[in-house]
Image (cartoon, rainbow, N blue to C red; front, side, top):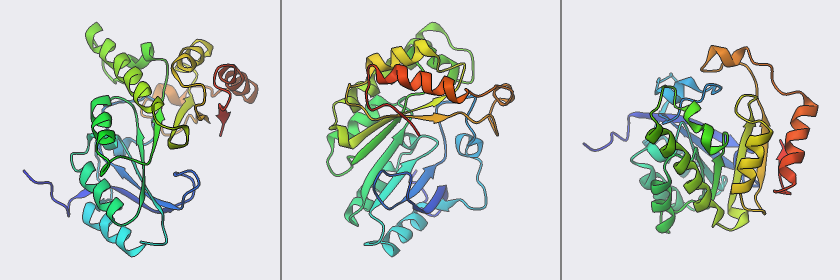
Amino acid sequence: MPFDMNAPAGILIKTTLVDYPGTLACAFFFYGCNLRCPYCYNAALVHGTVPSEAVSLNSLFAHLEKRQGVLKGLVLSGGEALLFPELPLVIRKAKSLGYKIKLDTNGMLPEKLASLLEDRSVSPDFIALDVKTSPEKYFMLAGKPLQEPEKDAFSRNIIKTIEIISELPSEQREFRTVLVPPLVQEEDITRIASLLPKDASWNFARFLNQNCQSSEYEELIPCTEPQMQNLVSLAKKTVPLADLR
């Protein structure tokens, strides 16, 4: 059944200076996600709840046409943008209007990512990968108990996505990690660092214990400034461009 181009598809941020490095852009956050990160604060996007500010793809396209020549980039995020069946159509349309494309992904769909990169007409110009923890802990993000084969699949997916993105030129990629205490400890930093390219832009963010999907994570005490600096310094030993944003 064809997708209804007038149906609510996500949230449009009409102008952003922070979501696409060095580029004046707009951002579109698709509904739906294949992870249930306990610290996530975007429950509406994850669960597909449609708020009043939701817009359709036709509304997105109208905005892109109106701002053509002023905005230079379009950020496609979520949720998880790669879940959306019309994503190639969105990228192709935006590229035809002269926009550069940045894709944010959680790394759980390496085959779909590889498929985009193989087709120049829909290949993103920049990709940001959220590396949430070490691969062996990804089962903690499922939101439900997993059998061992499922846990292994989660680990393989993030490792494969890191490999795919690592093959891109350094100016076309970044890696991001939120410093959530149970998920990102010294051993996790070391494990993630061993997987990233040495020239990676690896940006760390502070964990905020507010509006989390899991009430347990709202009770967590965020890392102190010295603790965060210690983790970033550890990352820098292997990935020199690691930085706390």
